[in-house]
Picture 1 (cartoon, helix red, strand yellow):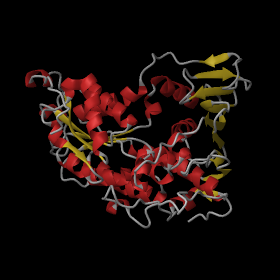
Picture 2 (cartoon, one colour; picture 1 turned 90 degrees about the vertical axis):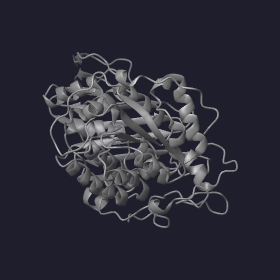
Picture 3 (cartoon, rainbow, N blue to C red; picture 1 turned 60 degrees about the vertical axis):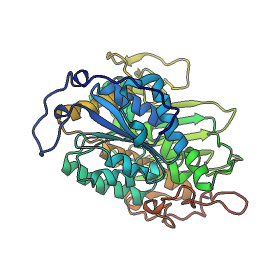
Picture 4 (cartoon, helix red, strand yellow; picture 1 turned 180 degrees about the vertical axis):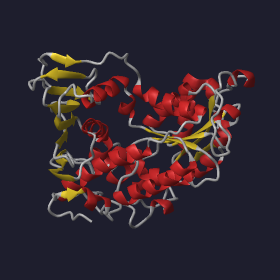
Length: 451
């Protein structure tokens, strides 16, 4: 037992049981209403995971954090200590004995759950298909919150798609961290677009201009340890900047267009980033939808440059500004309103709904579905958003035009040498290793082949 943990105050069982709703009919299993406590296992103790576990606990007064798993012991312990300051009474008794570390710690955390409990999958997304499969194949009925993206290559995206077919058949409730889909004002804006307020949607634009990710010092870490502690700087862990950082607004654009792309071509690469990692500096992608509509995505991650972060939807009656980075969405009359302009023009339409914390709402909705035993599975949405980002990444990295059919058939995988399933030793080699100079392979358009 970690001696740094403080004594905790726990709620009485009678208090925990208050407010539980009756369950619906379905496959025989334990529903939330039949349990005195919903146990939560938290797998992956990074920053976003820290937010997810707090939001899950706020969403369900009958829930307690039951188990924790991370590749690193210090991160698992630090996560519990941080929660003591804000949610001490929501930590289950004996959680110290259910705080696991190592690359297979997820199994022990998930195995500690019972029917009707919930696991939060918030590790680097490379491990999402492996972990999701493990939950779905469990003999227990365990519900899932999965962060985005849900894979980092198409081989493993197909793998998670197959696992989700089992999850749907089994009735597992699944939430996916595309939180902007749970922003009520965004929902209202997209509905207005679909109802014709914008006229016919013509094109969409997605922008993300910002400073670069910082790569932490290598220190005495092995390449695998270094990469996992700097997951946003390596393609195999995060999927790369396009997949990790553009996925939200790409998803918003597809939502507005009511289509997913069938073609992409793009350009970009790494111009001056000095760090020994795999990040690119800039990229631009043209997507084509089945209807012929276009979606243009552009991103730049350089210091001392102009920043902008939004999604723009152009229609025949005006232009909508909606999505991550926008703030309050609006539809403007005409074509002059620019997301980076101080003068936006006449407002054609604005949402009337109150603002909400979309990160909290996505958990509120998931846990409501669990309590009421309603169908709830957002994984297909996560799969298609991840696919859209991967399609653009393939086009940029290879410099080729790529169809959706080609992308879905891609056999490229980062774990071709060491499968994620066999990556069990935190002190062992990584899926991607540096060369003798400590440099990592970076895709080169025109040289890197589409596989």
